[in-house]
Image (cartoon, rainbow, N blue to C red; front, side, top):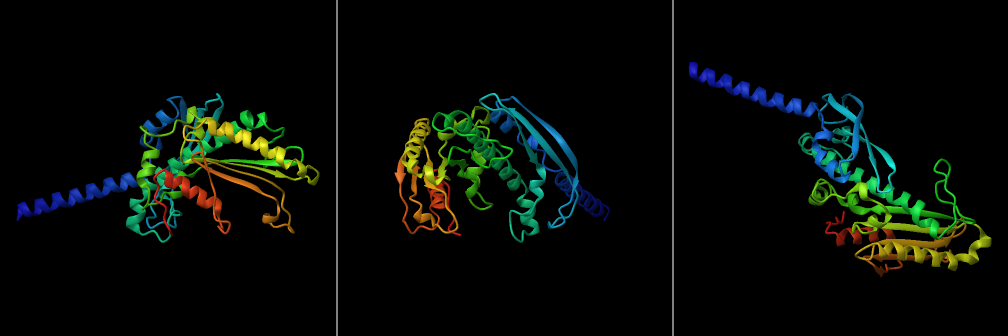
Length: 311
């Protein structure tokens, strides 16, 4: 009996120990500095600084587990290829959020914690890459072709004489990752062996990544300038040729030249020139396609091996 009682006590102690370890691990939060150190070392080429700017306990009252979790907010400082010092923020509470999924059950909530954190890092790298490329386009490439002004404090878009421009680099990879699809692609994206090197990023490096594309639009806002549409179009084409030449595969991009719409004018009546280029080849969509730009992103992702859900 004593032997059985002793064994029972040992088993109970082991269960309590395991449960306590799980509880401690859960409530300690996800340590981004440790979990992603090798990735940060690679993507920032070892020249970066992570500072904890906020740290306390957080309870997600909408989650299946309502335990306080140690959280940290980080400032990430690094230099881009042009030597600019950049700052970005990371918050490890993302792993404990429940806005990714509807009606997330207890087991799913626990299981998905690391997935959410990994996706957060993927989205972080993707955003940094997009933002650097946009800034480099605006500062070093667009001025070769267009005269414009841009004040980040007051302007939504670069403004020319009678026209405005939209320049939006898009990394498509994050659009097609979920808890059931393309997890392998996410892990590849954030692995130190395969990750993009943010510190080497500029617009031309960006053009050479197959999951990326550039949207560029010239929208003529002054009616007196509309006759210059062909001239603007030639400039856009020349700029896209430069962007494409930086890519080993021809690049992915989408450009538009048109006059500004108003409440009485349908888009189809604006004499729009719109071109999609995938891997250096011009592609077309059915005129009745409702969302051609979304289809374009899907085609890019498919070329990169992503599974595209029909949901």
